[in-house]
Image 1 (cartoon, rainbow, N blue to C red):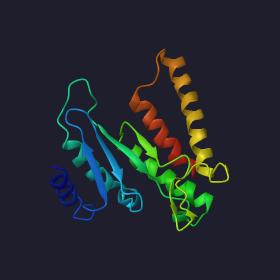
Image 2: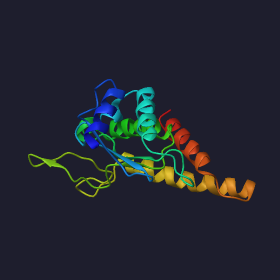
Image 3: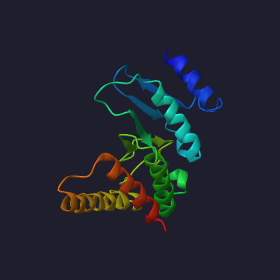
Image 4: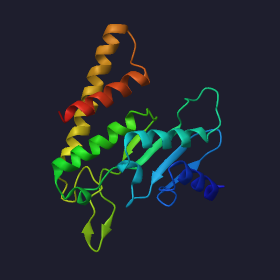
Length: 184
């Protein structure tokens, strides 16, 4: 089943992703998309192709009452420190663009890989991190921290105005817009 699904996904993406992405469908529940760590193809594709691929993946899940329509989780996304030339500003910008692209689809979860690096190649840190191997917080860490603060403030304001917490769509839209505006 998984090989067939990977072939179908590759076909949906013009054959380019068949070897680069793995997805696990849990019938009647959700799908978790885990991109191959060194070849994060969806991170690099244009937004329209990401949307098409995520729509296809989500379409493989049977509808389920009382669950959201979109049930594909984005796990382990992002570019490493070294892929960004070990430049904090570029690392922050490129990963913020990736988050914005994924958030525009409105998945239930987008997860950057990861807080602390777990990849060392030939004795060198690859740098999938928000906090580096010397315990220094990166610019991307600071962006994510500020996003969380701004989400809390937005939620408080929405609650003050409407006497209820924001819906998922409202906070997702806020987050996407905030990240997109951050670099301008």
